[in-house]
Image (cartoon, rainbow, N blue to C red; front, top):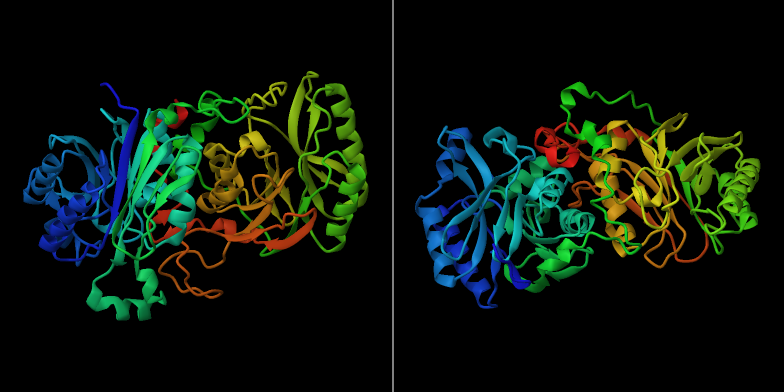
Length: 564
């Protein structure tokens, strides 16, 4: 099908209650409101037919809508009238007597082009709705190749990743979310990690029956404001730039003009094609049944002091040692230096520089362990760009780069990610050009990693603004990130919250609207040492809500595109 390059996309955010007739009127009204900006495509929120609150499974089915029934026929007729593509998400009655949470894409002719059922539900949704049994479709339209997903599908990476790998240029996300970190983290990262456009529509207003708001707030400890849709519907470009964003609490429409062809360029600034350089053979565990993937014992400490070091000069061994000694003397047990590879135009000299750095840092690190990145030789004499972890005895962990990249083209790729058990917990070190692949951190999570240290050479803003923090959130891994430049943002430490699982009693903090984001401790822009504790033991809890484990409940059986 022929595609136009520049299109206008819009999102409408509004409230949905328990009155289905009123909800249909709202959908039709907001389609009309969106049409005033002359869009080609409009995306509506999740569960447009009825708020996601049910007496029992039969009630859920009764308030769901059949394909071809009056509710969806009215939507299709409105789409024909307005001459637009539109996505509406509803709970849908199926022929087998089940109900599904499904996103439905209609053409300007009212044709149902794509019917995509949610792959991972959150909390009580699991009690009423059936999950998808097949990979989400990618619809070829006159606007481009379109994929659909909904809310929790985008809190972890697998569903959007598969859509992008299957050719989607535009991914349409309908949400029913109170979580403020969906807008700040998960939505934009799904665009940047896949270099596609994401068009996401959330709700505002109560997400529970209005007459029950006070009682539910009192019973759960969740403030009233966080029982409402978090808004911030948005349109995101393939580099992670937010092109348009709605407010936190108002019903409204926002739109942007996008060049769909930009989503066909999968290159990083150094020329690396992020899809061509993937290693599907190494990702097989992601598509295996979690029931046979018990996490290894996780015995991490409750709290460990960590430090990020930012240097004036990445080749100054004396400065690096002084900062390491300062951090170790202040009690840091895990320290991340920036990469210090030496002169990459003189490879043998770079190896020698790395050996000097190892000796010097090991001599001053005391009881701490220090990460950096250097050039080493493998057993066959080939050069490798490696993240290393150093202790007083020298190198205790070497992690060569796994994914090929243009800027480190000399590096012979490794075929696995390694971990190391320390007294404080299970750790890993990650090179820059492995860190932007979502599969990297998924594999580390499956290996039971509690803390990952990243000596980083960033190339894009999203890495430090949203990307790595989102990796920490969706996998529940503490991160210690030390960049060699603050051009794209400063280094940071992410420390996993102890209070994490929604709808359970929280002891250390009030519920603040964050679904999965850890504490984010950003360094200043100046050189120096930044210290903050991380919490290795908290990495063992992956349960974001009842029946929703970030690892065990991932849609592994629908992740074929990741491992093909």
